[in-house]
Length: 274
Length: 74
Image (tube, rainbow over all chains, first blue to last red; front, side, top):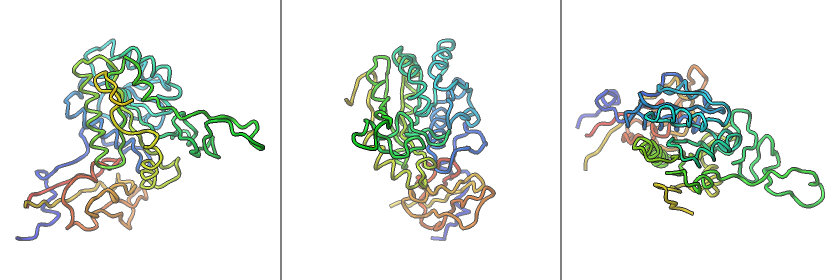
């Protein structure tokens, strides 16, 4: 057999994978190795596969993904901090035939936007919510978020997050940081949610699973199944975790996943995991 | 058994050299170049092109979508 060279393989007819055409040519501003880029790609691929790019309206949050509208070649609206679900509700009610999705981080969805998140999920609006959870406020410099794990060091919890007030000398007057918030489990309890799942994007297998989940969340909305489709994606923030991207993914598997277990929580309105 | 041979094309100017593709390649094909691109990142390249099977794992995990994967059946 004659030797086949790289030049012979790289031809348009042999292409098996490339970036979705629904992403613009603008390079992502995210840090190297950030999960946001992967999740952007997955959403673009799903919208492209479903052929709904003309009918999709995204709602961008405040946070690292604030510039999401620059990267997708679909209609986008920018929301005030945490108010993406409220804005998506309005858009969906005015245009019931459009596919509306929000893209939010944990500081946006689980902190300042908790009210909007819970009430939108409770009203059962027919929208898709993508929730990127990296346990920290990325854009503002790594402050503690509600989803920050216990013991995790951040800019505002330099000795690690302490859920309860420490006892003993030297700790008097130190603040109690509260417990990490599992908002995905919380909204799964509400009757207004249709599909609630938690995924991750640290390895090829997980990325493929996450894509299936995002696809299901969009298909549910496309088929008019009433209820919020909520997809949490556990992601990394290597800059503020102060690690290399590869180490951050390892840290995520060892520390984030035990507290935020992956898998479907609610499918077609039925709780599958307690 | 049918065998496959693959190749990747990296958009070197957009690559940020995070190295996620390097550890997720099942065949150890990818490495980070000693040279840097315009932004100063050590971009990914095919260190051992003969081993590539075109599984697209690198393309799937790449956070910046800079990797295109090509595959032929031998």
